[in-house]
Length: 88
Image 1: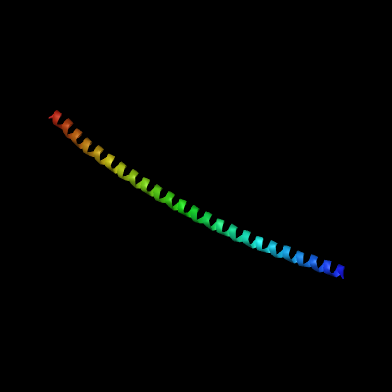
Image 2: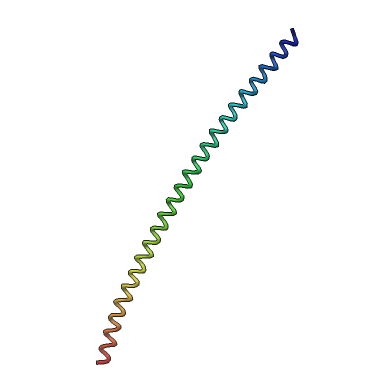
């Protein structure tokens, strides 16, 4: 009978270890999934911020180029009028 009791105890212990292993594996899988989702969300937010910054910089560059072109045009017109006036 001692042998049967020992075997039963070993089997119960093996079951407990298997259950604990399964629980730890499931917990690890949930933690991995959560971390992956958080990483994906952070990556998406960073990509959106980068896109917005790039768009803002492009718009600012376009406005700056237009302003510089307009100033150059006006200066060219006045310079042309001044040179034309000197020739008359």
